[in-house]
Image (cartoon, rainbow, N blue to C red; front, side, top):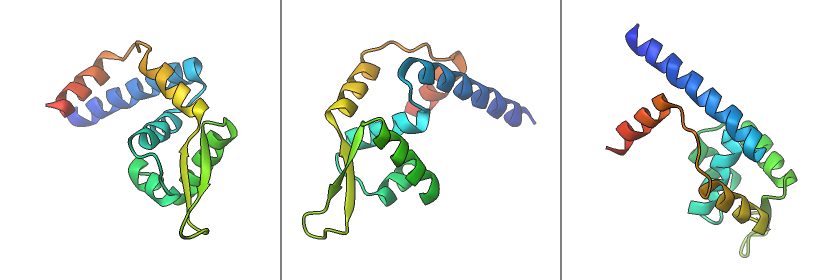
Length: 120
């Protein structure tokens, strides 16, 4: 039961962080994580994005559409196989990532503790 209560606290902290993140950047955490994934790997397919973020293909499609509408990512047609679609950051997406990186975020204490544990 003690672990369940810790998980509840972490979940609440993540929800609080996401609310603040959304207000500051007009991005959900999943949208922000998509941008980070593309920063680490400049060309990803929708399947690779789904795997990287741990989302279903349906949720990934909705997420991609949302971030495309914000003009932060663009579709890139495969050079060898024209049916193979990749996604990459646009100039606006790169600017958004830079803005996020250059801002100090008020991280709930419990999330700082979890991140610290994961880094060790």
